Length: 48
Image (tube, rainbow, N blue to C red; front, top):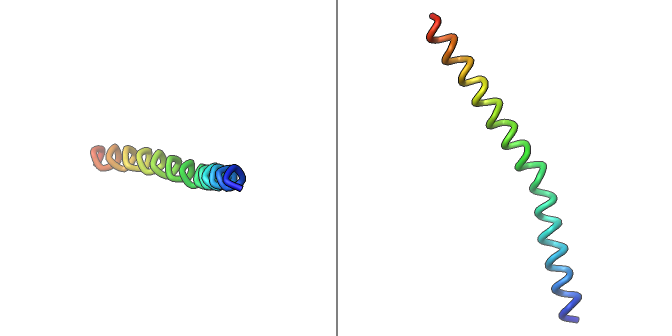
């Protein structure tokens, strides 16, 4: 009984990890896009 409970907890935690991976990847992509857009905007403002 205890072993099954531990296995379920481990499976639940790994499931949460896999579920959060796409969200983490999206946050990283958004951060990189914001940095690129920010650098482009600063270049345009310096030209003007």
